[in-house]
Image 1 (tube, chains in turn cyan, blue):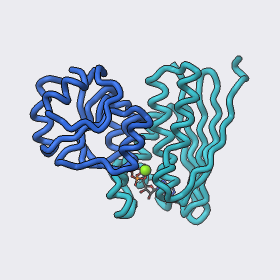
Image 2: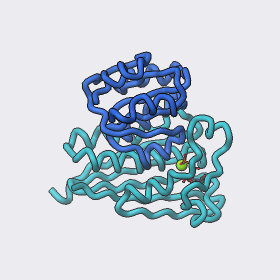
Image 3: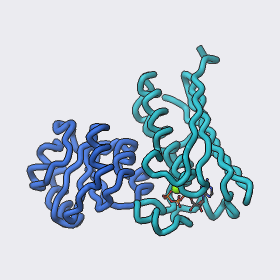
Image 4: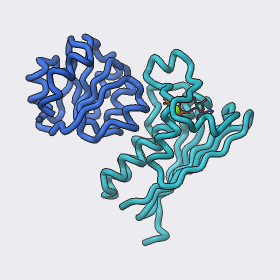
Length: 142
Length: 108
Ligand SMILES: Nc1ncnc2c1ncn2[C@@H]1O[C@H](COP(=O)(O)OP(=O)(O)OP(=O)(O)O)[C@@H](O)[C@H]1O
Ligand SMILES: [Mg+2]
């Protein structure tokens, strides 16, 4: 049981706000079918959505790799976008470089990364300017 | 209170009611989507003037009981289609957020 898992891969399109969130929605419905507790699903779905949206807005898209085990989920988000110069600053609640047109859609509170850190049990972000950004999250069930 | 009761008290325009007997046990007001996902409790009524399609995703993810569009704002077409598809409760009122919350906060 412990070494069985579901592997899923998603392409996240950049700058498309109609498809944005579809990877998180798909993962959410997988977890629902598995009977994972709704409070855990909520944490997974929000953390992944925030990461997905960040790739859509800030990185021109990317990929999401998801491994679901019976007791946890690993989410890896990778993009080849512009990267983040100052990670410590980016992690601060309220810090945002979101352009005005996406602010008008309700993004840009600077709460996405803090939310990911809050809802994930393990959160790791690596970024290099001009190379891209990788976010790894683990959420344990129960 | 239920979503149905909320609609009555607010005299709200109904855009989509999927589950009118759903209990509303809390509330949240605001337009920044990440703030909603960070702070809105499950089963809350979410008061906002944001009316694009991402509102539906956030309402689903945060598991709010109902979205209350304020200040006479109407959902744009993609949002309306999506809430119908995903079964998200969406209603609208003429009052601004303060006025709408004032009408119901003692009942929730
Ligand atoms: N994948 C990414 N590639 C490049 N920059 C990023 C990426 N993710 C985050 N950032 C940078 O970090 C900042 C903070 O991100 P965070 O998600 O916390 O806030 P936001 O996306 O600006 O607004 P919100 O998430 O509240 O809508 C962003 O404004 C952006 O400058
Ligand atoms: Mg963000």
